[in-house]
Length: 306
Image (tube, rainbow, N blue to C red; front, side, top):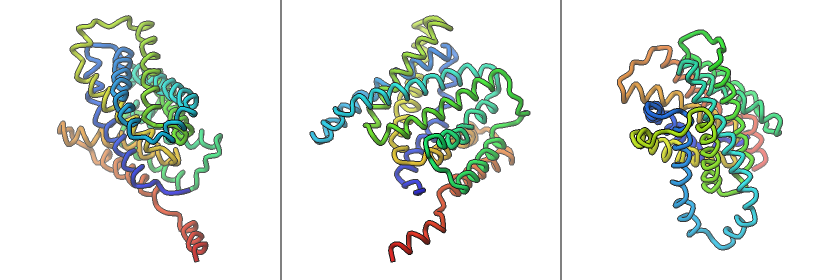
């Protein structure tokens, strides 16, 4: 198993950083509109924001690459739809689940995708070595210390968030399958429109159409979450995940929980307990361990070169 290239590591870490710091915008955005309406708005904003990026990138592509992309258009559309369904369902389950559980438990249960991803990977012949499993276990302990302040008893909200974690895991696996075959920015653009349509259906079924005035009041958090948390971060995820072991990618992106706590400490002046600090240390240790080269494989590679 190859280590995560620095470029991909940087993109996935930036993804986690944007998600972690966007929590405030997401919370404020639902002060005036419902969770389904907020998800629909941010998804459509994310999709629209990527259209000029797609057009700009296409201008710098060679004719050969453009022809290849046209030939793979069917795969692109299928991949975008699959990603959009997984992302839309996951987002809706998370927003509804948070209503019936604490933020700490929701954060911990959602991040359990770092366990679900390698398990799903076994069905797609994605090998996970002992070192990576140890990293996953360390990360889970770190997440527990970081997020959990109460007993881990699953209630209605926790079950919904657990289903959300499963859908996010499926999202990661779908990206792993399609990203090497298609343009990542184009697939990301399609996924947001699909997620927006799904959220709109949920909005009309559960909440009804939002008041235009309420949407206008929430324009800033919608724009922030739509352009950065959705348009930028999820696109960086697709590009950063390309050719990367999905388990390692999920470990890096789980730093979202660490960054959200650190952002609250640095920006909002919220205190951090020694338990939370130790949880952060364990999370970072898990990422470092996952990236350490395997000595046995290193020796084999050296012998082959000589």
